[in-house]
Image (cartoon, rainbow, N blue to C red; front, side, top):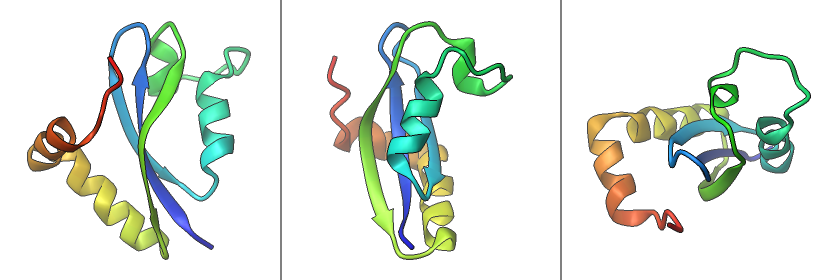
Length: 87
């Protein structure tokens, strides 16, 4: 089963969110489901979340390792240089 790391951008605030999942479509739908009552990070922001980047990995461990890198300072620099934010 493949795993994915993904980066979402909030259309209203421009905030980025990075995580990993085994089902990318389902996760994106859940982030944008306003009827779900939850305290998730993405619920703090109005507006829709759009997928701006994803990568596929063979194992969850590999996806989690990449996610950790992308959340680091070096990873944020990589995102700025390599990901089209669609603004």
